[in-house]
Image (cartoon, rainbow, N blue to C red; front, side, top):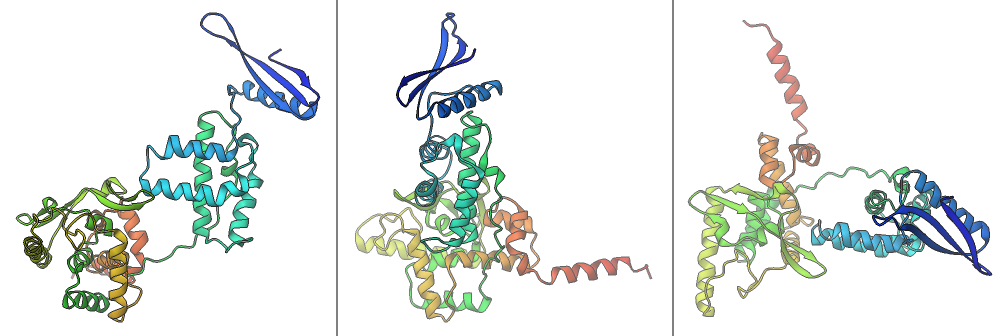
Length: 379
């Protein structure tokens, strides 16, 4: 007999299972106390024995889902992911999963529990309905935690894998018109905006705002006309952090045109003049705070572009859409998608084409005409 059951009190039962022997020949047992009716204890014993028949060794810890999510976040996500990702996952767990499902025992979480939560989030319940993309994020967090539990033999199946996440409609990346970007840049320059050079650099290179703000002058090579991107500023719970870019392809070299190089040289000269006036050494950072100390908060550039876009009569333009503008302009000019992907730091040209396919409405027509021309017989 692999397992035994004995009563310890009026509503208390002790389960004991034999797990084999250690290196000294001593018997290894697992003991677990179950409270409730005898039928509840018998069911738990059958669960343990069934797991053992499948080769899954029972553990002494019976996690609640909320406890397991915390463990997964601490052991799997925090050591391997960026701070921003950790913060986002923690928020999803705390706000959307724990309040409804956190009390459920990990091994007893069912596909129906998962489905009911996702449906409730979509419909809103006591709160505002969540967008499908947000519910998909909740689904992915739970799925990742369950995969980890499955790998560590805490559960015998992943209940989240049996639930289909909501369909997320594809949205096109908003890219402003050429005239809008010209007006915005012209206004920033004429106003002498302190972040004018940074905004210009984003528009002319497609950098992410965090990548631009993390640059130091040692990353700029005016002789070879290029900038090396190796860091990015991110906003996390601990404040503004300097991290490596979100993907390996984010670490890259971006070539500069002559005009952009001149803008940066002028910006550097102005920094040196200001540093002299303040009685300090010239800053190492390209875009420090107005007093030339410390990093500029990434949100600062977002607010600056939003304010300028309203003044320029093109509300809706953001630092992110300036990045989209750069990529769209390159593709419309006939640049190879692989080159564009490398320039803006996408992990693959496929992602670039998925994001910016809407910017190339004439490519199909051009391809059809090119094929027809090639098929014509030689004169």
